[in-house]
Image (tube, rainbow, N blue to C red; front, side, top):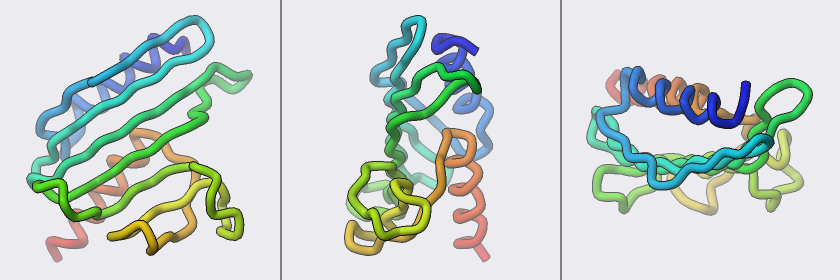
Length: 131
């Protein structure tokens, strides 16, 4: 898969997601070896999502080198969760991947993420909140 094809795949994931109501690609670029995408999205429950990925081509395909995904309430005041791989919690299992839950101080271990994984996790969490 080329970086341009990966950007198109991201767009299709957003279009076909059961939880994304609207989205706007604020910035994107791709060359032969790397790419970047930054998106803001409105979710069907009214919440707000902002995401950014910097990715490269490696032997196994696309490698997301740097990411952050921030899910907030509709007023963009309350953090629901933020997934990122900034290397500032070396003691956590899964370092550098981690999740901020409800505030910056409440941090838990994470795993490598992608747009597909993110939307699946948010959908599951929204379903849990409804129960």
